[in-house]
Image 1: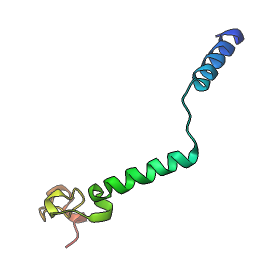
Image 2 (image 1 turned 135 degrees about the vertical axis):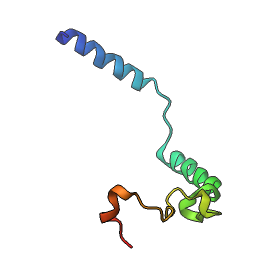
Image 3 (image 1 turned 90 degrees about the vertical axis):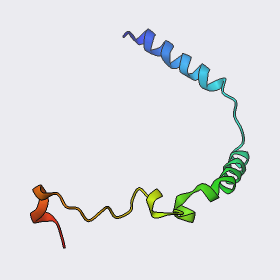
Image 4 (image 1 turned 180 degrees about the horizontal axis):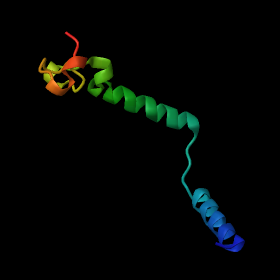
Length: 74
């Protein structure tokens, strides 16, 4: 790729970025806070799981793989 082609790519990217709609950081923060407050009841890190079956990180059954038997802890 020639230097001219590289510069055209840079200019195209800058034009795309310049054409983007921008909002103030304070507005973005307020939107983010509202989203978090609206969805906090769905956040398992905050409210936990309603049942252990829904928890993907729960302790698995006590069945052990015989291949790894020497490494299984009682």
